[in-house]
Amino acid sequence: MKSDYYELLGVARDCDDRALKAAFRKLAMQYHPDKNPGDAQAERKFKEIGEAYETLRDPQKRAAYDRFGHAAFENGGFGAGGGFGAGGFGGGFADIFEDIFGGMMGGRARRADAAMRGSDLSYNMEITLEEAYHGKEAQIRVPSHQTCDICHGSGAKAGSKPTECKTCHGTGRIRTAQGFFTVERTCPTCHGQGQIIEDPCPKCHGQGRLQKDKVLTVNIPAGVEDGTRIRLSGEGDSGLRGGPNGDLYIFLAILPHEFFERDGANLFCRVPVAMTTAALGGKFEVSGLDGSKTQVKVPEGTQNGKRFRLKDKGMPYLRRQQAGDMYIELQVETPQKLTRKQKELLQEFENISVHENSPQSHGFFARMKEFLGG
View 1 (tube, helix red, strand yellow):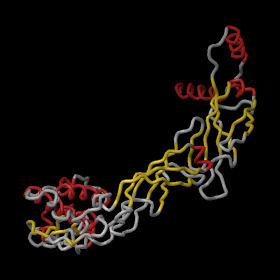
View 2: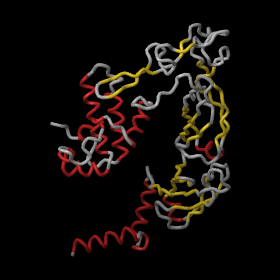
View 3: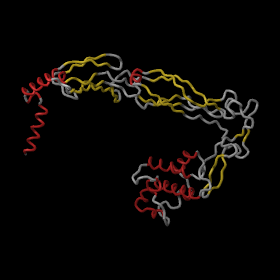
């Protein structure tokens, strides 16, 4: 009895194409015969997940399967005979195997001595909110592979050169029949290089590249946000056999700030004020990230949570001559550790208070009393 396709791939029945593809990729990598040579159970599992994905990735086949199950494809039914099990890798299904296994599923073999692009590198950088506000120039040290300056990337000792591998004839791959399809494997003689270096370079030991830190100066523009990615073209690993360098991607993380929180280009700051200041009115001064100071006037009777907007005092917009706003939110502080005299004065105020002094609380409890009475 065939397994349920959704259970086989480990996905929900209402999963989208992205989740379906991710689940298939993971399982295909795990059970691929190239990683499990001679394992009949892995080969069978690989075939099953391929059939499942080939069915569920097609909207029409998926709809038929959801309605009729495996019976939809039996006895010459919908799509019978044209799927993974028949050895067909058409359309997007071939694309995903090309993406995962580099074309070993029947794709055209690439000569291993062709130039190969270097790997992309990533670097995580933490900056302060002030640095994000002003921008900065920073020096970073990135571990990378650089072309050997002795053999110039060939891996062979001066005066010699690599020779073509006789086992794979320079392709770096060997094709073998494996069960129901043909599989390409890495050549065991040259380990996929397509070449044999009989006299390796003494400095890089035949690798053609050396592990070496690269020191770079990076310009961080003003207004960058948390998670911003900066791409430095050609600053990744050196390519092989004359191939182009990879790129370097810098991922920025902005450290939490003591006073400000950021939302896009706007800044938010919570300022505690005394109860007397909120009741009688007053003023205070706040500093911006640019060092400027702004006076904020607190009107008489200001309530907790009141916000004041300071126009153009927020973060600059990236590569624009504009800035967001700063919002000051008041947090009215209740007095603590009162002296006897202070308590007496507050009690006296309470005794002579009228409804208009606290309209919100009086109104709330009046409505609550009416509701309960009703």
